[in-house]
Image (tube, rainbow, N blue to C red; front, side):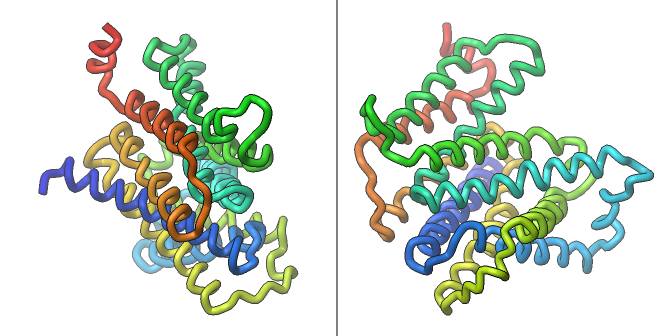
Length: 305
């Protein structure tokens, strides 16, 4: 098996795991009576314990190295921003969007992150967007319009709160994609992800106090928690990040569309969520946006000419 095929399989497998996890989250919200303010702190904390526990056994010195403030204070700041504003807030707003709408809506709104990253890059490079970049932005806007309004100019097909939380989730993805470059050059990404989960779990536990809610999950609820922790955090991230070095981040972002496709199919077929032709058109526009942003630079120029 070539590296390209292997990388594609790994990234799509990881994205599909995220999609399954999102659908399980939707099931827990709609059938088990869970709330995102209860599930997210527990999910993050357990996933953080698993990953940090692994590195604690494997390489204890490396695990605590990013927190050496005297040696490199910037690492501590970067880890806090990456873990709290990026990964943790993304996890919460993603599951909040699912609770307010559906797994398919949550994942497709989160896939707007490449456009946000594009805008940040344009600001950093002090330039305007190029022709293909403008086309990508327009496709994303049209896709979101079709998904959220179903073609109507008079009202939203999803709640404004779901739309806002979905866009915030995409912004958080942009933060944790752009911010930790220097950290990733020094430390294993799964280890950084473990700290991010652990910090997020602790932060949201202090904010929402899930143990004071006196919610007791059923056996199916416990299985659901296990699924979103192991499948949605540990396994999905490990598969996806193993594939990225083999095919590059641009192709990986294209193959990550397996996440909303998986979530939409399961949400519609298994959980009975509505999926209209407007949703299909919106998904198609955002998929074309990802394709356009994933093309090599030379091919973009040829397409424009």
